Length: 454
Image (cartoon, rainbow, N blue to C red; front, side, top):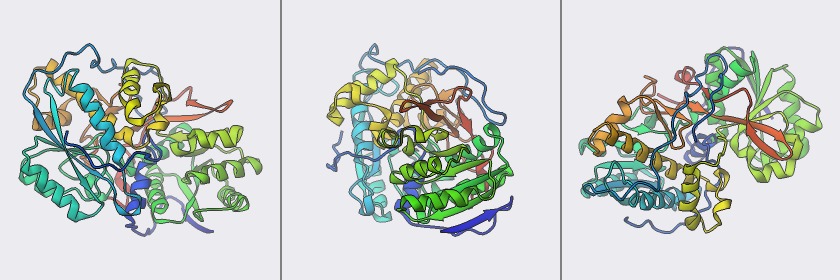
């Protein structure tokens, strides 16, 4: 086991470049998190929130009407719009995210029958990349040659921004992954690793009033990168921290040892960056040692498979990026649209079951909502028009009407649109749900010190 410490100074940190691990760390806090269990087939061409007070220093989203789109909208009557999608599938090292494309295709099929994108039917041209610059460049050239109006990025490690910019084609993506994404001439609707970790730091400071945080995580490239983002945000917040590193796979005794070391410095809050089996190990270790300090962790640890195993040992754990599921018209459309693609009954379509494919669905349905607003405001729907609208419009939310976006609001990372993250906690009886006195948390004022970003 290794230990590193900060008492308010950033210190020196290594710059890890293991790309698959960086993707994993950046996606920990996405509300639809989990493993992508979709097929690897080749692509075809083709809730209003209740208001509550947020902790000091955060911004609670204002109430807003849910998106207006739905079954009542007629088929679009405008000119067909050709849009390109770039997504990583079949790459080495587990870089395979076909459900992002598959779910987006299903959403486009639905909206082509109900309103389209700003009253324009959409033809989707998909291109697969393999997690290397060569395939990303090839896809950029191919899609530019097809005269697309807009490029959508699923997950692409090396987007060829120069080619898109030279062709005058705007780019809108799911989430930033590597450093160039944060300052690219593009927009990413959801936050990346830096913004999610900053939200966790904000929760520690403003909700728990912490002055010192204990961190435990595996000693691998992805976890180290995630920890560096968290540590940088804690430094910015003026919170001292101590980090303890363990193995990717620890025994029960090993996890107990990590927990003991993490509390030796008398922290106010713990943060665990372990996932999957590590969630079970850390939860059991904390409970067996009688530790009562609150623990902030990822939404992966709120997975039903984890909670079913640990039960009430999850008491006192807080899960970042886990939105409350509500029965809304939007949720009903999601279930009806995606159940055939997932080949499961509609009632089994939940946020946890969506995996990373949920990113593609949320991206598209959010754009559809913005398109409807553009029509209502007599703004012409074009690829560039949509891009410009996102950069200037106020009062926009991600699909579902809960998470506010503000593209370009942080000058350090102008490509990022979302800095607000919901948090949930264990409620007992095997259930995870919203924190009663907390709506959402933003760390937008804590992200500009991240040493992994420009």
